[in-house]
Length: 132
Image 1 (cartoon, one colour):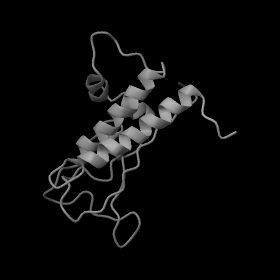
Image 2 (cartoon, rainbow, N blue to C red):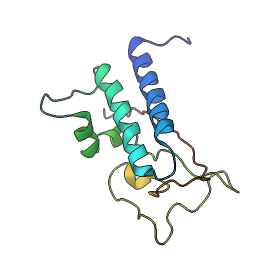
Image 3 (cartoon, rainbow, N blue to C red):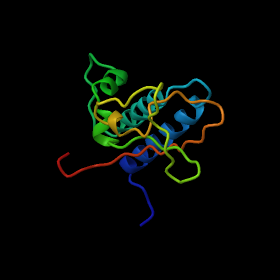
Image 4 (tube, rainbow, N blue to C red):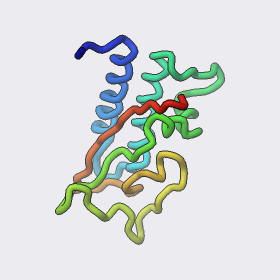
């Protein structure tokens, strides 16, 4: 009906905040892996606010990201290069960081450090599956 419930609004704003945080991070010398994990952290904060994820008293959001909980809700990579093709190649080249075999991170199109002139999309998302 075009109207968010309070929970939907919190999640929508969490994904939007994830995108904004990554926009602020992007620049020459920034790790794309760090950007992805920052997006996961923002989404987890929203899920905690919405009461969907419980944050144990003895843990931080950053620890939940390290545990790869963010990958449950954002199982895809954060974005992709844009060049001659919409989904451009060049994410994993010799002499650059290799693919990380952890949940969520293994779906990244690159683990490279961003450089001036690179064009990459920032597409965080939050997904719910029936088993949740």
